[in-house]
Length: 203
Image 1 (tube, rainbow, N blue to C red):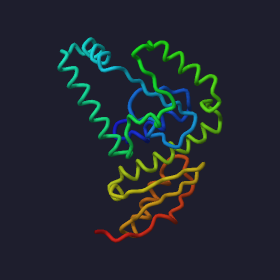
Image 2: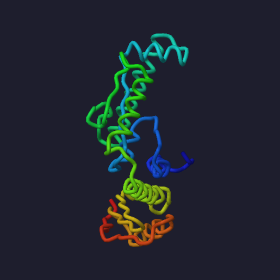
Image 3: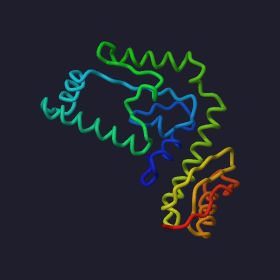
Image 4: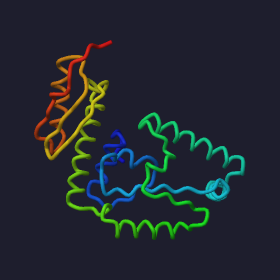
């Protein structure tokens, strides 16, 4: 992902053309609201995770266990802080594969079958438009966050075609103009609706 660009914006830019596999944590949370996204979680018994980690990183049993416990806790705290959810909640995923008995290649074939046969995961022109709008909204939100005069603002952005609506609060009148300027500088944005960007008293 490009340096200096917040992950949600960079991810939205990468996937807007479709046919992308994202390997990592919470990618589906960053793309919340986008359809045609197959959300997969892969789990395994602790014994299998330890064996895989010991082999890959040449760690001892205790070192591997500490590594796993630390990584899981960091993921748990990170997703709860950023998205207010428990990343282990199965409801956040379309399918969960347990590698206790299923081999990785078998899981991959099952994923491929789901993508090819389930209509809800087909990447249609409507899905591409949806992801383009998500990418535009993410880019506007990222640019506002990276712009020093507006970096302190907490806003929500919705895009539809070239039209962008921004909600939130500003503490100074000039901030509205700056938000509008930054939003209009994003490629593809033609109009900006600030009717829900309301004044607030700075504490």
